Image (cartoon, rainbow, N blue to C red; front, side, top):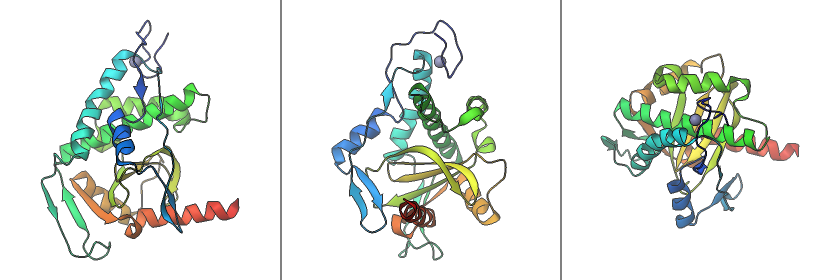
Length: 239
Ligand SMILES: [Zn+2]
């Protein structure tokens, strides 16, 4: 059997892999806030599925353990350097910001991209439409290449009020560009997959993120979130 991620032949396939690490799911289930976004009601409850399977080889599963371990420590706030607590969290005035070393952001990128790769492989194994399409090998190559801050643009915001919310990666238009969006442990991630770059305003925010600054905003005040809720309404009106 050939592994779809490392392309290795005669590999061992015995370990159960998860799209998002088990610890995230366990935490979500423990917190008991399995939620769904709704423009009117804000957040409402929903059961969240564990997505797992024996899809890649044991070596690849071990490779994923590294970013998973980092992410556990990151989301438990073990890497923050400082957190500035402004009295108003609305963007435009000064939002609350957490500062990290740039190397931490790179490891976070590593984790987020690995989740996208895993989810893409899961969808393929179920013959569902993939999120990375024909670009998958290029995406995996860049990830293995390890120049993550150079090769990827990922917007990150920490959103208060969304504890326990998981959204698996899917294709999404942001700034009229092709992106992939996911939510994990109160953080929203938007990964640029377009040939074109984000506009200048978003790019300047991106540079801040790459240098280690993550805004913390109540989800209703976040521009990323506002755009998502607008789209949500649009989608519902269309149906
Ligand atoms: Zn493999």
